[in-house]
Length: 108
Image (cartoon, rainbow, N blue to C red; front, side, top):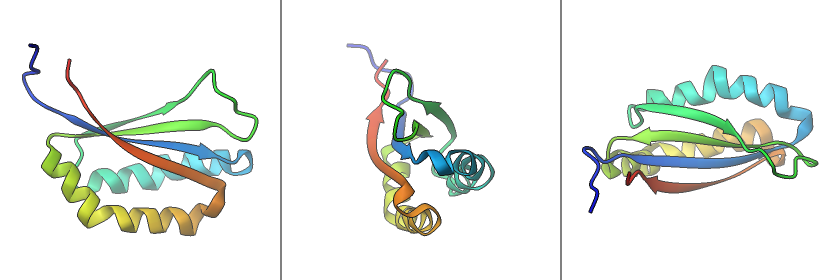
């Protein structure tokens, strides 16, 4: 079976944004949030994607993907850092931003 030369995990966060905060949220993601997540040292890179061919009538949907070299890096982020990021997110955007996360492993 195919085995990648080097295993990598993607912490995927799917986010729905209320239309009235869309532009401010995008600026916050680029100027603050993503930089702070990368500064934890648990992720090597990221990509922010906008979902297309979905119902945007109640706001756009994005996926933030953060790449971790190992499951241990991901676990350390979840244990040490995630709660603070979620608290900041709630304090900043409240109910105008809804999100859920999944862990994916690159297999090919």
